[in-house]
Length: 222
Image 1 (tube, rainbow, N blue to C red):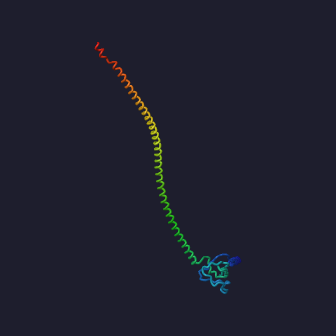
Image 2 (image 1 turned 135 degrees about the horizontal axis):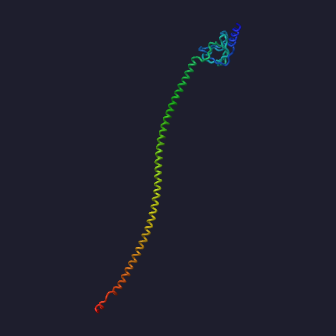
């Protein structure tokens, strides 16, 4: 029996201990009056705290009242059943509606972002395709340039060979022209010598013929 009394005393003491710093809400009652004491006979300090208003819980009593502090700084007693540790259904509903609206807004923003991302992806894919085509075109051009460059080198070498050959032919032609001039000069000299020889031979023959011709006088004598 003594233990039971001791247990009840502990429970009563714990119930009467002040509670500091805890936030509770006025329950779904239109207005809850705040009084100066624990009972309806005490003076009303606040005509009525509106439903859903957060107040600071300072103390709970076994009398069914709790001491609270309103947002305006008024401290007094209010019926404990008017208090709840959760926001009222209306406020929770409003909060849920706001949260839903934020979720919808976030979803809309995400959809817009997704569309923008898809557009960017399509643009990147198109850009990648253009770049691949450009790379292929440049590769073809590079191959053609290499071939042209190779042909140019070959043409240069061939041109140098032709220039060398041309120079050699020009030198040979100059030698031939010089030899031709020499031969022409020699031919003219030989011709002149031949003419002079013929003239000399004619003179000699002209002198010898009369001498070698037999005389008619000598023939008659014979």
